[in-house]
Length: 258
Image (tube, rainbow, N blue to C red; front, side):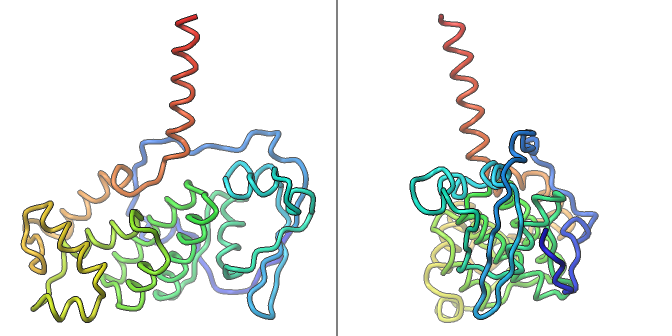
């Protein structure tokens, strides 16, 4: 298996450990048959590379993109080495730790946490790994609660690397609408960008609040409790699980009809 990197890390479960996220769906576990053929994932970052040994069936269970790649007629379907070149080694290491232990790891420094959580979210979004994607957005929220701020660079990175309907964008906008104020819209747009400003205005209008003023109707503890209570409904991605659940419902209905 892959060797340790020696970097200082901690698991996501220990970040603001008091902050738990109830989820409406049980975590799915790979079946015994998924532990089959060993595949090498070679992750390259500039001139540095690292290899991870993983079960192909486990990869396919968690990731729709890996499943399509290994079950396709392309070269990846026949090779025992799959190359990843667009993501950082530490990002894949978080995924690797998660599929083996159920817990990803993240840097100890505050800004490392923030950007590693963002990189992990982007990775899981691309490779269609919804369960880990939900962990990543929870980590993003936990880091925000510790840092109590989101800087300009990270906001631009999120908007450059996520689609328009991204739950991470929605979370970022909700935080800003609830807690942040700005003096003039012109200054806000110049600093944070048009798309983000437009989303702030749309979200404020939907809630009938004035953009740039903040809700001001609850304490931070009250807000945290509210966010915790409906975090799954608002920000988790369960599209894959929900489609599987619907197939089961349709199959049961067909059996009853027959």
